Length: 251
Image (cartoon, rainbow, N blue to C red; front, side, top):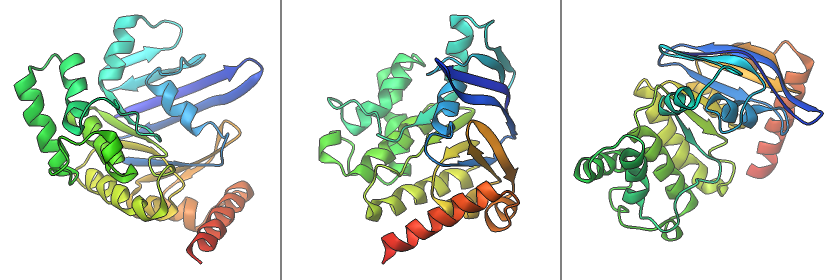
């Protein structure tokens, strides 16, 4: 379980997060929707202190981190309990697929190389890349690179997996292969927080959907409530625009 309370983040005079709070139970998939600049990615980065929040509290499992009272040990422990799948993959260009997955196991978890290799191979098989173990990122498609990123996150066995617009950098024909892997991860009971514009994925997979705008949660509920029967005008405007854009791309 992960709970975020009263999360604030500003850059100079620009207040990006204005007291965000929500709770995700173990095995749930929370999808965060919202326009560019709404604070979605900043929220994910604040959860694992890639960006330091200005205020708030984070509770994951038995660990509670209160912003302003943190130390390096707490932040490291928090990061061990989370894993991020990034928009632009963030793979080491000079390492093969299997070496990219092994890296965190060896450096963060102090696993010996043989065990790390075997575990990495098993997770690359899980995402359908058993025939790409020794390929470098430059030899892989965008979809394959993102699947390496998902395997890397899975191998760390985190309490919560966070996905920051994992398909937005992909060519349209490669989006499906990444979403299929994410659906498989969800079916395995992983706790997930997903920032995305993929409305159909949210409708099919999400336990709850959050719509953010202007650094606040405008609307929160089941996919049926937020996507199919939104109450707030701002949510309706966003969904209409995204749906219209998808239809134009399909034509």
